[in-house]
Image 1: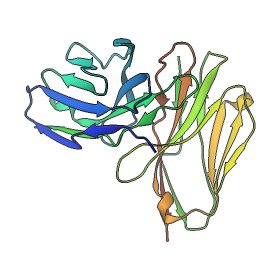
Image 2 (image 1 turned 30 degrees about the horizontal axis):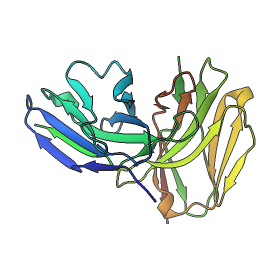
Image 3 (image 1 turned 90 degrees about the vertical axis):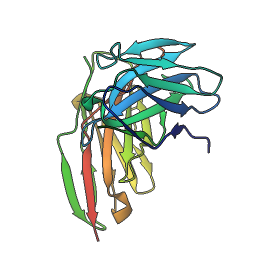
Image 4 (image 1 turned 90 degrees about the horizontal axis):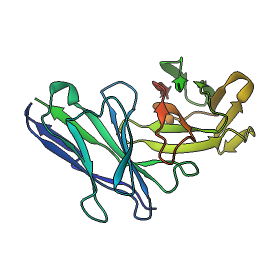
Length: 114
Length: 116
């Protein structure tokens, strides 16, 4: 069964450094998402992406964050200057058509900011 | 605004007991989708079920069943004859159909522990 792949599984970064989280969505999917989950808390939406542009973003997704689909397969989340509170599990998801198909999630990248 | 409430933070049951996880949602849309996801200790999010707002039929899949009641804005999830492998955090989520890329709004999750 096709799946969403995220790398790395765990990233440790010094505060203030830039970090790029990578995702390979399911190949025929058109809609891509990033969510985050601070330890022990609920999953929160960050951003959705369709047709090479951001469709929606939450209040969390400020100027520190950016997303990109640099080629036909990868979907990346960049945090420009990381803060301690960015420590969380980051999930990438993709869907075929959002209103009819479920979002399928990757296994997540655990980001630890020191 | 959308909201999903999972009032049960943690539930503990003994293996083979039945358990129901509650989910109450709020939305102003008439068309929306409801989901359940499972997050086992390994951390990934596993899709379990999607329901649209026009389909109130209950669904059963093996030991899992879902009860959708629009009158009470609830979408409850029952596990029959629970097993240790069911131990996980279960999230209920809502998606309105207002845009082409509507995000999921998650509840805070219910941690289920099934004891052997």
